[in-house]
Length: 320
Image 1 (tube, rainbow, N blue to C red):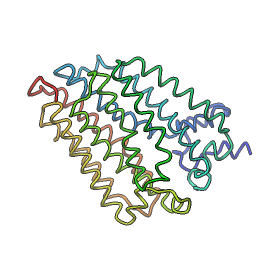
Image 2 (image 1 turned 180 degrees about the vertical axis):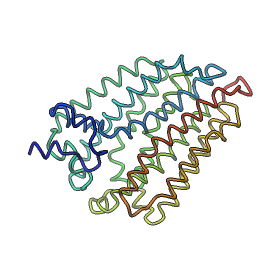
Image 3 (image 1 turned 30 degrees about the vertical axis):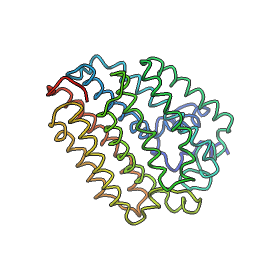
Image 4 (image 1 turned 90 degrees about the horizontal axis):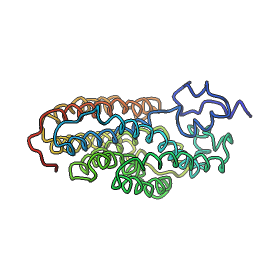
C-alpha cells in the first residue's frame, strides 16, 4: 500500500523534485500540486500583468521593476500557497469524482495517502500563509483579495451545475490581475477590468484544452465541461477565446499604458495562441496536456510585452 500511495499520479509532470523529498511530505506536496508548477504559473502571470499595469498608471510613467521586487516576490509566494490551498480544497470536494477518473484516482485523497481531516488542516495552514501575505498590501487590496474567497469556495461545485466551469475558473484564477493592480494603485480602473476580461478568455481557452484529457471519463462520471459541450468544435471555440484574450489584453495595454505599440509587442503571444490551436488534436490527451502546459510560455510573452510597453513614454499622464 505504501508503494501505491507514493506512486506518481497519472497527471503529474513525470518525476520531479518531490520524489526526493521525505516520504511523509510527498502526499502533501502533491496535494498542493508542487509537482505540477504550471498551475502556479497560470495563477501568477495575471498578478504580474496587474502589477505592471498598476505600477505604470500609479507612477504616471514607467514601470520601475527594481522598486517592485518585493511585490513580485510576495505575489509569487502567494500564488504558490493559494494555488495549493485551492487545489487541496478542490480535491476534498471532488474526492469521489477523482476516484472514478483514471487521471486523478492516484491523487493523495482518493488514494488514501492523506485523510480528509488532514487535508482540511493543510488547506487552512496554506490559507493562513496567504492571509499574512495579503496583510502586507494596502487596505483596498486586502478587500479585493478577500473577495476572491467566494469564487474559490464555489468553484468545485460548478462542474456539477453548468457546462461552463471553465468560465468560473476564469473569474477565479485571474483575480490576481485585479489584486496586483490594486496593490500598486490602491484602486481599480477600466483598463484593469479589460485586462481581467482578457485573462478570463485566456483561461477559457487553455482550460478547455486541459478538459479535453478527461472528456470520456467526465461523461461517465457526469462531470460537465466546455470540452464536452463543444465536442468536435472545440478547436474553433478555443481559437475564438484566444482571439478575444489577445484583443482585450492588447486593448488594456494600449489604453492603460497609453501606447499603441503595446498591441504590436503582444503579437508573439497571439502567434503562440495560434500555434496551440493549429497543433491541437482533440483526440490526443497527451497533446492536450502539452499545449496546456505551454501556456506558461504564453503568459511569459504577455508579461514581457506589458513590461516593455510600460517603459515606453505614455501619451498622457492620466489613468484610464
